[in-house]
Image (cartoon, rainbow, N blue to C red; front, side, top):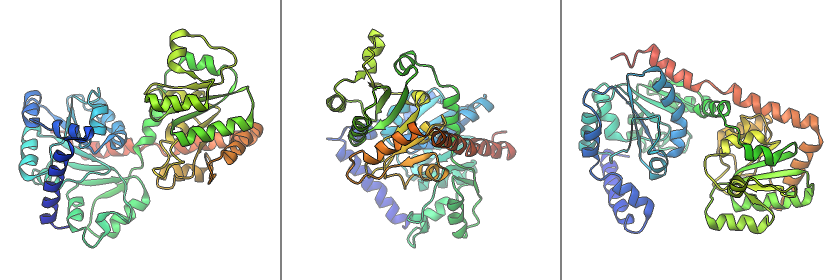
Length: 424
């Protein structure tokens, strides 16, 4: 792609976003979140602040960057964190994130916008996370000799960097002082570009994050009471396809001493009502929390709130992660695996490296029912409950897998320390 075409893309994207904002709430947030952004930045950012600027495209990238943000915050207390997002799905969820002094949308890329933004912020260090490359921002940062790192990067052969028309994007890569990639395969691809880029394998910072979450997870009295001394399957981030498979599996197993907890990916009224149809005797967490009453015959609990999932997996005998029965793919398997429990999920997991590697390590167990009738899921759950040796083997594999992949955050922050990037 030439710079001319890139500029056309920026213009078309901006116009399209403004048109879409007239009838799409997400696009409206994207547009209005950037209104008068420079004056808002000038009002809150002191001219003499020592700022570490971290940019994420969206929420997934933020989760990659979060362990590094919090590590830098604890080590460099005199510095302030500015966190920017491109997408509303990241900004709207994390706009009150306590780990940053300021959270803003990133103004649209362009020569004037990049210069004005950097004039206001004057960062001492800039970190871009995983998937985000904006030419004018990178060029201006580079020209001003501000240390610039790309962290948690992941590359595949189908990306524009490796195409004959990807010259501009290859040029963007050369603007980073150092690129930290998640996998050796990504480093090999970067090395094959023959651009003499400074690149090293740090790993995936999300492993550090889930280990931290597990270590500080809260005890939930209602969950403890519901599970008691029973065996329990905890299914997180589920969609209707997952819930139907689980229902059929539990009907087939037909064991009233086994509990099921479902934390749906979406908790809107329509989805919760559909769950109530297939699990008519279920209890909602909100009801249990308010009344603290639980009858012995209640074996299915639905978590109808946000933010609890990462703490409740620890109560599971077996975990199930949703999304794997949809082409978009399985959700976060690491949140479950960190507790050292078998992790079950559907067949759509291959585009997520951590899920693929968890299967290879023996902690992840995908089921491939083409008809989604729950037969293979039933067999997996039954086998794990019956065969204690197999169950222990899967548990240990999950635990070892997560623990063996920790350390990416430390590698990145060590580089910053060793190269004295924040001494000024």
